[in-house]
Image (cartoon, rainbow, N blue to C red; front, top):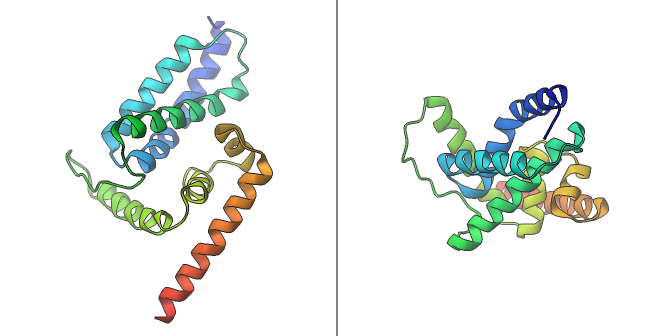
Length: 166
């Protein structure tokens, strides 16, 4: 498996990115509990499948890739839409409810875009991933990620301008 120093570094990377991974999954699944479970499954899968020769700087990318793929698998098997369910089936603090309301507003706007554009905007703006990371996670060229982002942002701007004028 991993040497102790590498294991400590990887553990720190996982810990530092845990909230980002959960948020990433949440914006795709619409349920925080499912998102948390999926992220823990992704971490376990990563640790089980990883060889000792993985570079610590690649861990974050691998984890996002695994979470992304697990979200797609879950949505395919459950034939879910990429939108929030509004499901408040667990106890949330007032901050969590505000986050859910804000997430819902963001998702409503992004859901009006083509999925391939909204996904990249979510990954860049919400999940704070670089275009290099996005291109690796989605297995697309970096230029494609950037052009989809620009196209989606242009459509959002037009949407907001039209809504303000009417």
